[in-house]
Image (cartoon, rainbow, N blue to C red; front, side, top):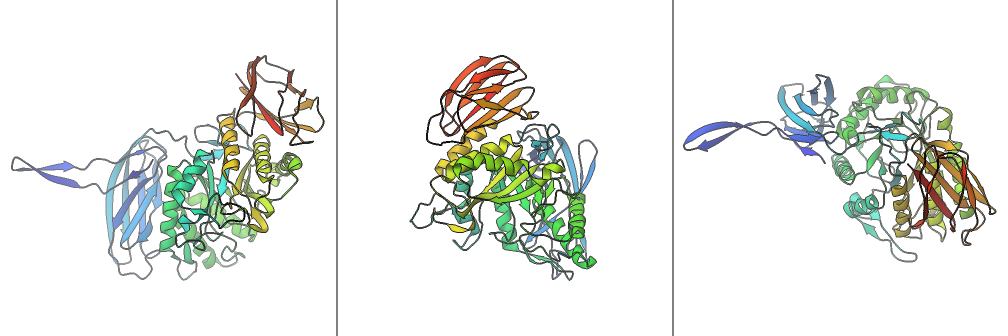
Length: 519
């Protein structure tokens, strides 16, 4: 939920022939929601993006002072946005100026407690995972899609959606797309300009940056809709060709910094994770300077990644891997485990976010849904997060990195996983698990002071029923052990179990089965 703010004015009303001045109501906004304030300003400058400055000073209920920027929103309008982190009454002063004159506005708003748990942060309990500001775990399955005008006139109406094999591509618009994927349990959305998407800037230059009015408006709508549907946002600043990659000219770097400052001002209140660029590499000096500058100007201190991944740099907070592969479905969990546990970011004690994942060669085949399910479940047990790049307008899409088809079957699998891992013990760590009684079993386990989880996969067959299997578990507490079918969410068996090391009989299952012991 957000708040649409307004300039505080005195209202004049007539009561029995007498004029009374009545103060306009103070806007209310929930904690971590987006407060927005716009102003009209007359100017004759040629570059309204950079020759007019909107400087905002905010004072929190605690007395803490913050400084943020506003941005040009088109026409004669400038806007600032802010996501407050304290409840109580805030005040603000906004100065908007061009070289010829300046105007100052003042206002206030009240922040009330809401349902938001805050922004996404590296977990204080497990450095490879994410939590929210309040410590609640953020165990996400993510999605990305194209936002381009190749398919329709409006990039927010061209989302591929549940197309068939051998049939014309099928499209839908933003709202039904997000409604469907949010209901399926997807909770992270990755987006950035110029990566199968519209752009945000027309020019980044030492002579003056010019940003896209239409692109900015599209991104405004996208960010608001993502927030409204409960998605967390990974925002990529640049696409495949970041400007001035050599980082040798101070004026060029200053132009990049001005763009970074603009993006933070316009979208930072909606964002949880930054990514500097997509599948590109620049000089170490570029990374260091721009990431450090982003840390300085971001009032929310969102974690920063980049692709290609550079977790070795202290300014980078997580690894951003891209992984496309079409492995045999019998090997999907094993391949995922080896890939994710071998990620470079782990060597630096940082989370791994595979923010592009899919198949190679073709977006869909008869076993791709099962592969996706096995990858997603294994990622949770491997302490990693996956964002699947969806191309579901058709099942006939073929390319080198073909992405993945996320249709009704795949979404149903994610819905089961999302419900299963909701509020799973954030202190749980990877432990060794042992399974016996059938050939080809592979077991993955997590153990925390509150919850114990186990994921068991049949690596020998995905069609035969496994019976007679047993697993050795070691929950920290006694609790109820519930066995779940990851393909349907159906409970296969449940029983009370004691704390400590013990052997449990696995109910009959096909392909995979999950166990959660909760006290």
